[in-house]
Amino acid sequence: VEFFTSTDKISQLFNEEDFLLKTFSLYIDAEEENIKLMKRLLLLLQLGSYLDPVDPEKIKDPVAAYKLLRRVRAEWINIVDYTQLSLYQLYQTVLTYAQIPQLEDLDGAASGLIRLQEIYKLYPHNITKEMALNADEAYHVGLVAYNEDKFQHAFLWFLYSLDRLTQYSVTTKQQLLRHLSLSSYQFGNLPMAIYFGQQLLNLDPTNDDIKVLLDLYRRLRFQRTSNPDILRLSNESSKYETLCRGEVDERTSKRQRALSCRYSTGGGNPRLMYPPLKEEVEWDDPRIIRYHDIISDREIEILKNISRPLLSRSKVYQDGWDTVSQDRVSQSVFLQDDPVATRVSQRIADATGLSMETAESLLVQNYGIGGRFEPHYDALETGVNDRIATFLIYMSDVGMGGATVFPDIGVATKPKKGSAVFWYNLHKNGELDLNTRHAGCPVLVGNKWVANKWIHEFGQEFKRPCSLSEWE
Ligand SMILES: O=C(O)CCC(=O)C(=O)O
Ligand SMILES: [Fe+2]
Image (tube, rainbow, N blue to C red; front, side, top):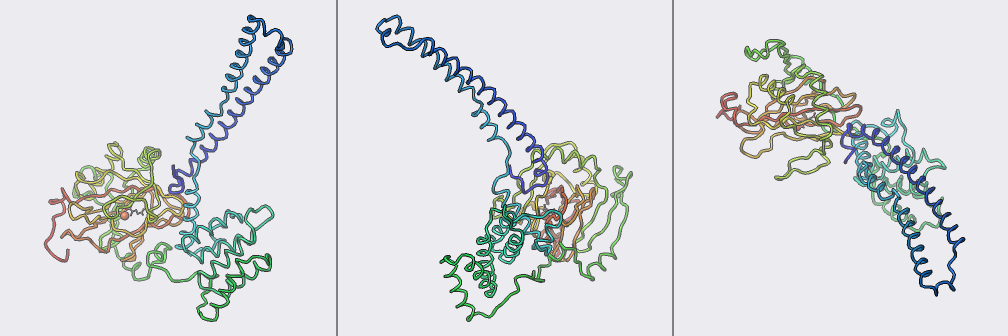
């Protein structure tokens, strides 16, 4: 199992740990019992050989020899049996089935922290407000950042680690100074690289490796002038990141405020008479509609419970393949033939007026540490029967972060439990609507559960007539 890509999986670790502790304790008790038995056996055998020692003289007697062979064999078979009683093998099997976080989980979780830091512009001490990392943990996060070529973030984590170094830390001051120097160099701040290199050399005058590096840095220093401030996080960021942080520009929010809200019965659909749908237009072009209270808390609980044991790492469609990607950190499952999913699907059909005949099964998703889905189109651009529309249901509120954002139009929709957003990915002429590019922002605090319904083109011919116009 993979843990870091689903907060729900991580919460299962509580049970897992409980199980591990209990079975370990049982195993020790059983082994203890076994050792007691073996000690008693040893005593008996020692006693037997004392009372009835092997007498070389007697061996000449064939009957005595026969008896001796029998006795020794019986005793040793007994010992072999006793030692095989050991539960070691069995316990090993239990351990191989136990779900212990892998190294990939630790690296993935660290990578999630770094992504949060990038998008929300956080310093290590902001991100670890409630719960401080110790020097070793911070060093690990720094190394992961370094390996991802995020040298400024790595530097800040190494500095944080240095600050927290104690006599109990496994990480050494030498390691940290070296990495502070290396990441400064990689980031292009040579004075800082030289400063930390020199500190290391003072501490460890025989370190030839750092002598060579220092020499290089000093020579480069005279050739290069760039001197970026490694201690300050830059203010530049993409539209996607700005939206994730909730910085919406004035024009967008004005236009958004001018949009409308209404109750709808889907043109007199009896299933929607009571209660009627609560529709809110979140954006006009492309039209993004929010449906409030489209799914009940009870239905949400059922969908989550069914999905929980079935979740696995989400993939992205790339060059004809579904592949695991850093761009999509979540776990998900397509729910087939589930009565609640079917009921929800019917409600989506009623709300949108579209046919669900060719739609995909409901996809339930849970995000992990820094869980996200980087900007993408839902349409797969396969040419035929593409994903004409998306119905995205929010099955949880999210403490902080986790908005769905559309960077090309500057719109962010916040998760609100029980509500959904709906939009067309394709124009009426079948072309991809380039403004529907969107992303799920990293989850900063809390759990994020969503369910997607991807609706396809076939079957919508009379429900959403196509157009020959270039403009629709
Ligand atoms: O989680 C979100 O807010 C967006 C999810 C999404 O875009 C998708 O699953 O295609
Ligand atoms: Fe999407």
